[in-house]
Length: 498
Image 1 (tube, rainbow, N blue to C red):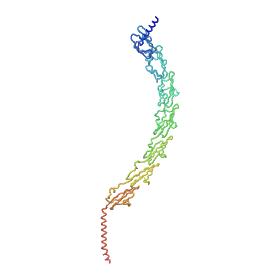
Image 2 (cartoon, rainbow, N blue to C red; image 1 turned 90 degrees about the vertical axis):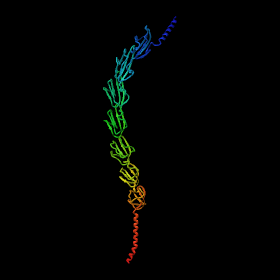
Image 3 (cartoon, helix red, strand yellow; image 1 turned 180 degrees about the vertical axis):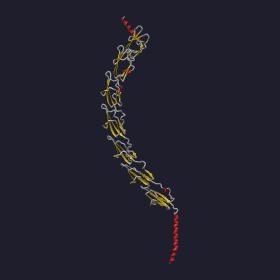
Image 4 (cartoon, helix red, strand yellow; image 1 turned 60 degrees about the vertical axis):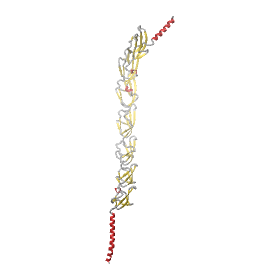
């Protein structure tokens, strides 16, 4: 009999489990955890949370450990579910360990629970901005307890910790218990602007202590290059000491001396920043270029021209090769080699009616003979002009001087003509004639003009003198008449004399 009873009970239990395998409620399961829950069931069941009636479909957010019972109309417990409701804050960041400057705590489901912040009861939304450590303790139903720990830190220091910055830092001590800058207690709001290495110790509530380290560097725009044109301004305002070429500066100054310079900034706690810079100027002149003249002035350095001290402001226009040397501070040396050729268009190879030699300095040789300045060459010929300038400068220009004489336009002369040319010699039919020699006789002429540098040109001309034939006939007639007269009258005269 007992055997059958056991079998019956086993079958009943299995049958009951099969019937109730699915939960009788929705919205919750065993072990559920959240900040609120909404549970629903059919009307045939009664719901109880922690022994108190729960209205199906309503939101439940009381913090704590809870037990849901599902009962039928006869108060039989059909299902039991355990779940937990946790605190819900308006900001989910409560789980963070660190907040900068402040945090606002607003427990949305505080009803029925106790909220303690550093031991003080909080009943409404509260903003906390005092630097330090915080403990948030929440007590809920059925011995529920939850602890949060976090710290509030000064954001301005968090952002620069273990970094190098270039701008001043403003320290507000309002929400600090104590603050030490490089071991010195600060009692008022302060601005850190002096270059250097810093250690800041901050003390806050509940044993908060934190150390920040950073370097306040020289602003990046203070010295941005290694080479500066003409000048560089040095501001010593935020430095402990500033040295220029190892000399202590007592006030801000402008560097104008051409040369190399070392600028040393000394700051707080062993801070030191060294800059090596060069001051130059716009010398105008470029390497291997050609200029009409040279002049430098207002150069804050020694200037040498071809290694001789140059008088600044003096204009040099003598043709030649030049090297300007600028000697400045700390072994600064700059050399620029260039050429002076005053008028680049005065001389060039070609053909001229006349060639004028201007005063450009240096020595001039024309066809290997010295020639003076301001001389005009108008004698025809081939010429080589050698210009000897400063420091080994030479330049050779080859040119011709030619003239266009109208008498050679045609091969026949129409009238007697004088040979008045700017030449070395004139040959007429191979014989040298004087300048101004006149062609007036009828005949053919070969005229050679001789110029300098072996130059020659030959022209052929013919001329017919219309008066030359009449003159010859008259002369012959006179001679014949004279002879006849002598033949007739000379015998008569002789007889009379006898």
